[in-house]
Picture 1 (tube, rainbow, N blue to C red):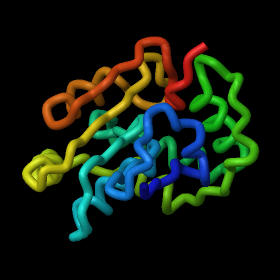
Picture 2: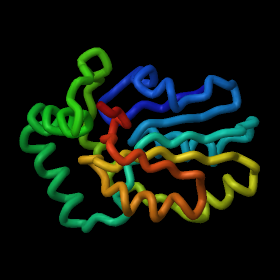
Picture 3: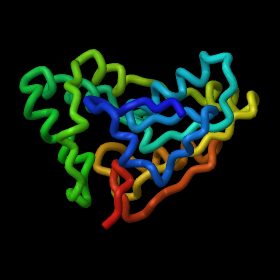
Picture 4: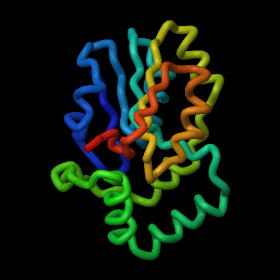
Length: 172
């Protein structure tokens, strides 16, 4: 399995073991990593059977002013921004320690994450290649609007909305 990590994280795939398939033909990604995973699957000629998108960073529905505000706050105080971000990805249940997964993060990655445009054509193209796409979303996600993400992805993928889960898809 090829796994792509979320923004300012590394090696966090163990948090998602119950959702992952360890097959050599699986590509998966969490949040920002879901964007990287779909790009990898779209541009790769090797065999891929399954694409797993865990809480994909979906901001297609956000205003440009929201996106600029995020970048502005990051540039003012990166450490405070990342602390707030890491707190929010753990909500509503903050019993997950992320310390061992933290790996920086920079303004270029944040901008890439925020302006990424999830392409319907790309998802359809992956379907036509025979790749099974699965999306997992938390109903109580504090990072993305899971309802908008569900409405978008459910047209192209098997999409699961875990009602009492946050961005990390963890429940009580």
